[in-house]
Image 1 (cartoon, rainbow, N blue to C red):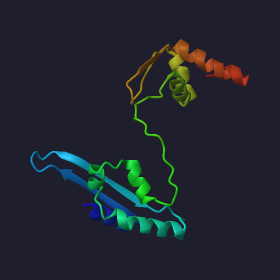
Image 2 (image 1 turned 135 degrees about the horizontal axis):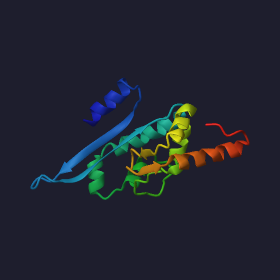
Image 3 (image 1 turned 45 degrees about the vertical axis):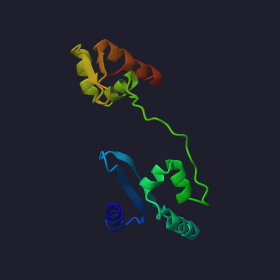
Image 4 (image 1 turned 60 degrees about the vertical axis):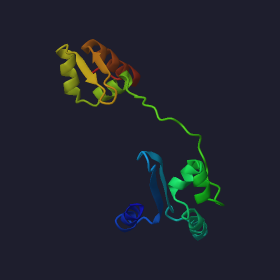
Length: 165
């Protein structure tokens, strides 16, 4: 399977590199006790010395499967250090991904400003209420025409031009 992925990347996307992946399943229970892999490729314009160093590092590392490395206690950082030995890789502190939506009234007003001026004028004239729902976090913002008019009036004041919607 890793060979197929590597072949696909080399032929269809024309990106050469090294890849190893695997899963270790315990014989008695059929549970996965180790799974992992790595993929490395050269960036465009990489010097020949880097390619040669990477090739030299790939020889020994391919003698051990990624799952064996995990079973031996190697962490992802350890595998990267082996792959990029002698190249001074930069490591970043691990972080846990979290969801944080960046929606807010400022974005809602920014979107309203993108509407045609005639449509905004019609919303204000009809005294309509505008409801906006964020597609990411489902937060709902309800704005009255007075609130919209007041916010857009700030734009006019800031530009020192005549008020026209």
